Image (cartoon, rainbow, N blue to C red):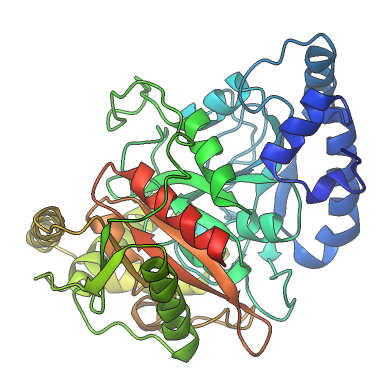
Length: 454
C-alpha cells in the first residue's frame, strides 16, 4: 500500500502499513508533526507537546523492524486531554491557577496506552477544569474548529476533537462529565465515545468524579473500539474501575443491527431543544437503522427532570473546585466559572442528596426499559461561534451545550456521538446512540452499522 500522507491514515490503517513495512512509526510521527506545525497555529489544539514522542516512535520503529510489536497500538500517535496526568508533563487543566510543575506519574489510561505501544504526541487543550462547552480557557486561549475557524470545536475536550478533525493523529483521549467528549465530537465531525462509567480507569479524579469518564475521540468507530480495547480494564488506583478482564471491542462490531429494538428518545427528562439540523440527522439515522433490519420506535421512559439534578451536581462541583483555589488567584479564573461558583456556593447537603437520588432514579428508569439502544440528538445545533463570552452558564448548559448528553452521565450508560454529514453552512451534524449500562459493545456495533451506511 503506497502512503501519500500518513497523517490522514486511521489507526487501523497505520498498523496495517507498519505490518506491511510500507510505513514506519517514525515516518508517521514526522508527517503528523509537520501537519501540526502548519495548521496548529490557527487551530490551537495543543497545550503542550511531548518531547519524548520522537524517542518513542524510534523505539516502536525498531520493534516493528524486528517483527515484535509491543501491543495493539504500537507506534500509533495518541493525544491526551490536559486534565489527565502524563508523566514529565504539567497538568494545567486549562487554568493559570494550576501548578506548572511536571507531574511524576502517568494516569492509568496513559499507562495502558504506553503498554499498548502508543506514542504520546502531547496534551490537548481543555476548558478550565472542564467546566463548559465553548472551547476556550485562560491558560491557552481559544481553540478553533478545523471545519470553520470562526466556530468552536466544542468542549471541554476541545483540543482533542479539533486535533482529530485536523488529522493531528488518529487517536485522542478526552473526558466526559456531561458531554465533554460527545459535544466537541459532534461539532467537529468526528466520533466521540463516552464509555460506561468505570470502564476506563482514571486517577486522579477531577471535579466530577462520580459522573465523569475518559474515552476515545477518533475519526472512525472501529478506531474508537480499538482504543477502548487498549484502555479499558481494572486499575487499583481507581476505586470505581470495573473488575472486568481485557476484551476486544472490535469483536462483533460488524454484526449489524438486524433484530434490534431501538427507541427514539424525544425527551431526556425535560424539554431539550433541537433545531432542524439535529432533527434531520436523527431522522437520517432512523431511516438507516430501519433499512438495516432494526425496529425503531418512539421511546416512552418515565424520567425525572435531568436538568435539575445535573445542574446541581455540575454547579456544586465547580463551586467546590473554585473554593480550593486561593482567593488572590480568583482573578485569573474564567469569569463565567467564578460567577457559576458564586451561584452554587451555598448548595446544601440536602440539595446534593436530592440530586443524587434523582440521578439514581434516572438510572433505574433506564435500566427498566426493554430497548436494545436509544437514539437522540447529540447537540441542539451545529457549532456556535468561537470566543463568545458565557453570560448565563446554566442557560448555556441546558439550551446550547449539553441538554441531550448530560442524562447519560447521570445514568452512567455508554453513549456515542456519530457524524451524520454537514449542514447547509458546511458545519458537521451528528446523532447520539446510547445503550444499557455496560453494553459498550452494542453502542459500537450500532454506530458502526450507521457509519458504513453514511
